[in-house]
Each structure stands twice: as structure tokens, then as C-alpha cells.
Length: 193
Image 1 (cartoon, rainbow, N blue to C red):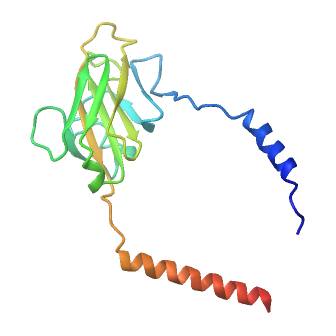
Image 2 (cartoon, one colour):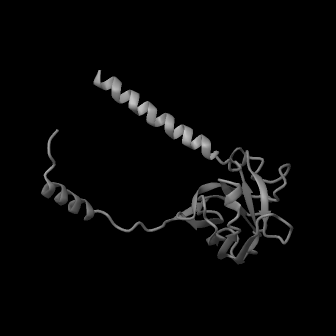
Image 3 (cartoon, rainbow, N blue to C red):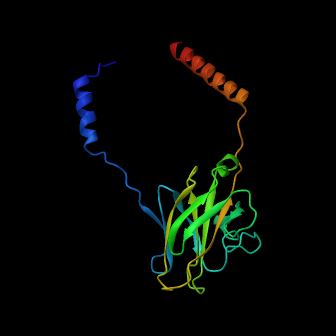
């Protein structure tokens, strides 16, 4: 095995640092900028899951998003309409603003989608669903009424969930770790033979 020249390693590291810069967050645009659209910072959401016309009520029988393929497996867990839901969701603003969800949400679920519904007089698009990054509890949003300038603003926000979290029992983790170490020992011994 060759010895690594520390000076060369340090030089390569410094050269690499020349090309490293702060990553600036970019907006995730949902959906077509030629129609009404929304955007949220990519540090808060992973992607746009869908958009369209109609209503996102949270009712699995007639929610315009839940009945699509991308809505499969999701259920409504909270809404900012003043109802009684286990996770508080709130918002400020009409065409741009902030949203907040209760941090305890992430104790029960490991995935979330935020749905925004706007009053646009049924011009496309009027609802937008974003895949929320795990652990995020607050952020900003912007709505652009391209086809309906001056149309009504935000109607409501829905919080959809999928995949409740399942905790791995501590003894099981220790067992898995032990088996992994044992496997490494046997692999090492077989390489020596």
C-alpha cells in the first residue's frame, strides 16, 4: 500500500474547496407557469406531487388529488379550516405567506404532503400538492394567478400523511449490530484463508 503524500493531499483538498460554494435554495414550481402556479423553496419540499382544478376537501371519495395515482396511500390528517384535528396547521397570507404545522406530527408520521387550495374561479390550476421534507414544520409559499389576475386568494391548506412511523425496538437494533459485526469477522477470516 502506497503512503499518501500529505502535501499532495492538502493541495487537492484546497483545489476542491475552490469549487465549493454555499448552496442556495431554489423554488420548486408547481406546475405550469403558463397557468396559475405556486412555488415553495426546495429546502422545504422535495417536489410538486400534483395540481389541478376542483377541490381538495380531504374526503377520500371526492378529493381531486386523493383520487389520482400520486394521491394513493395518503389521508387527510389536518386542515387549517378551524376543525378539530390532531395536528395544528396554520397559515398567513392570501397570495403569499407562511405555513406552520405542529412539530409533533413527525413523531407519528415519516412523510407528509401539503395541499394548497385557491379561489381562482375554476381557472387552472387552483390546487397544488407539495411533498414536504421530513422534519419541516414551517415555511413560506407564493401563488401566481397567471390566468386569473386578482382572483381570490388562499382558501385552505390540507396536511396529508402516509406511512406512520414504526420504531425499531432497541434490543433488535443491538442484535442487528451484533450480527453485522459477526459477519464482518467471518468475512475477514475467509479472506485470510
